[in-house]
Length: 439
Ligand code: PMP
Image (tube, rainbow, N blue to C red):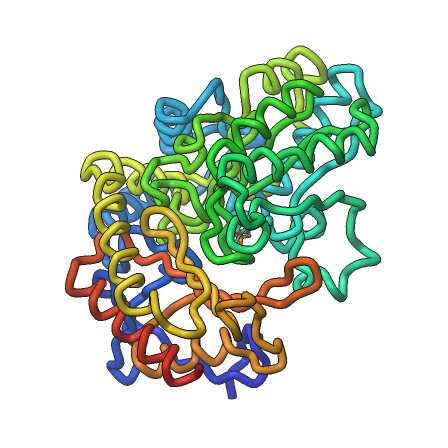
C-alpha cells in the first residue's frame, strides 16, 4: 500500500520514472505528451542537460547556506540576471521556493512598506474574482476562486475582489475591446474610492490569468489604465506572473506586452522549470529603500530563501531561455498552436472561446455557443476531458472556475517551449479526440 497522501484520495496515479523532451514516461513505459508543462512549469521540457549539469555542479560545490548568515554566488547571479531583464524600476529580488511563497511575501512586503512609510492605515488589498494566487492563507485570501476558498472562508483575510477583465463573458455587444478594457479597469477605481484611498495598500492581479480562467489575456489598454489608477491613489501594483511569466506568453515578463511595470512582481513556475522548487518576488527600489531606511529588516523569511541549489537551477533556466532565444520560439510555436486549435476546435459546438498568448492557451467549453451557457458543473466536463486526454497520452490542465456564480470549464495548455511542429500536431489531435469523446 502506498503511503503517499495523493492529490485525490482515491486516485491511483501511474508512477513517473523518466522524462524525455516534452514527454513524461511512466513505469509501464507509456509516454505522455506534457501539453501543460504540469501546471505551466516545465518550460524547457523534461531532460534539459544544461540545467541538470548546473544543479550537479552546484551540489558539488555547495548545497545550502542559510541566508541569515551568508549569501551565495548563484543567488547573487540570478538576482542580477533577473534585474537586468526586469521591466520598470524593479531593483531587488527575494528568492523563495514557489509561487505561494512569492505572493505571500508580496502581500507582507506591501503592508510593511506602508507601515515604514508612515501610513499604517493602508492595510487593504484588492484583487480580482477570477484569479488564483496560491494556497497559503494570505495567497488564498487574495485569490478569487470560490471552489478553492470555499471551506476556508473563516480563516481568510478580508480582501476585496473586483470583476476580472474577461472579454469573452463580460464585454458587451457593440463595445470595442478598448472601451471594455477601460470599463473593466474602472472597477478598481470604484473599489478604491469605496474603501477609502488611504486604506488601500495594493492591487494584485495576474497579467494573463492562468489556472482559474484558462489563459485569459487582458483587453488592450486595461493594464495601462490599472497602472494609472494605482498611481493616482498611491496604491501598489502587485503582478502575479507565477504562471504567465518567464517567457510563457512570448515576452520574458508578461506585463511587457501591456506596456506597464508593477511595483512588485511574483514569478515561480517557469523560473525553475521543474528542475528545482524556486520562486521570486521582485520589488522596486522605492519599496526596498523605504524599508532599508526604516527598520532595515523585512519581517518575513523561510528557511530555504535564496537556496543555492535552487538558485543555480533558476540561473541555468533563465540563461537558457535567453541564450537560445526561446522567447522568440514561444512566439512562433504559440502562433502555431493557436492556429491548430482554431483549425481543429474553432467550429466545435461546445468550444466557446480559444484564447491566450504565446504558449499559454486556453479553451473555454460551453453547453451552448450562442448563449455562452456553461455546462452543469455536476457533469464535470473539464475533469472528464483531462481523464480522456490522459488515456490518450496527453497531459492538459483542466479547470472549472466560477464567474458571477456561474461555473465554467476550461482547458489550459502550456507546453514546453521546445515543442516541435509535429508534437503540436500530436497535442492538438489528442486534445480534439479527448474533447469529442466527452462532449
Ligand atoms: N500564482 C499563480 C498565478 C499560480 O498559477 C500559482 C500556481 N498555480 C500560484 C500563484 C501558486 O504557486 P505554487 O503552487 O508554486 O505555490
